[in-house]
Length: 419
Image (cartoon, rainbow, N blue to C red):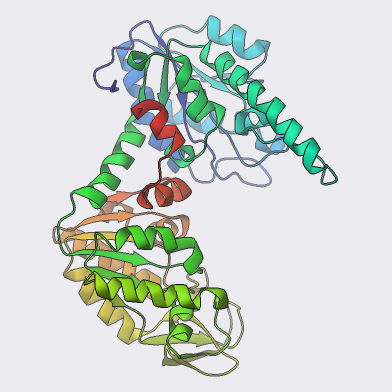
């Protein structure tokens, strides 16, 4: 497999799939968080330093056709500032503007293509009215499949080499992430630095972790995390469970959960997870106390109780002090930590203490020599909110992609290059 460090980009045009799906101000369309743009800089800079030219392609949002608010022209200003270059822009990723500008692009220059998802061919999903019949949907999908390959081939024609550096979309079999790779020889396609670092961090956690290995699983639903939990049960020594899915486990074991979030159709599944964990010698830690609210509101009244004795009419929205202490001790004794999902509704200040405490505990463990991987939008947001991103080993940029990789699934964007 080709690597970016071994490749000399001198006099080459490289088309890079980046993830510039960044948040924009709703009024001015200014970039409000440039983390993803910064993540692509090492790859861009390597190619430019070698004497190559860079063509950047990305999606932004979920447009249903061409929509001004989803135009990638809004990121040009910030991208130019970060690269120190005047970034050229093609106002149609598959039109004459892109073809002409790519053909005349010189070494040291950067060209940004318009939003790939302005074309249905990128995702391969037909854009049909809700009234479309199953037969119409089937026919449209079949027709779009061949057009998707043509779209990928058109994009590949702009460059000599393909670099995938968008881990956040690696789990999608899109034209720019999977199909385009088939248009390049093995010597002329590779991962960028961002994907390489993502894969290295995840492979370290999955395959070469130091023990004890602790996985912290939070969030609302057991169903969202079942596959990753099952995969991790073969690897971890400790499994910490928090967030809304706590109460599915609590109710399954006969606990009182008030009006806390619960997946009643997953009670047997929760018991099965606990049974499997016991069989494999994995210690499962559930909250012992909780901070409850009378309504789902930032200004709700608070009542603390045992986690499995939630009063009627109340709902658990955060872990309590005893749980924070217990979870913190487990994390402190770990050599590898994976964290995915908050401990409560941390966007409400009254119910953010538990998640912030876990973020700090992971940072402390890292300072003491543990390897820590943070993934999932809410966990990453919690780390950033507490200004701890530089205090943990790795913060993943790919929520869904990371989950699927950790579940043991094969990601189309990774397979297209790894083979």
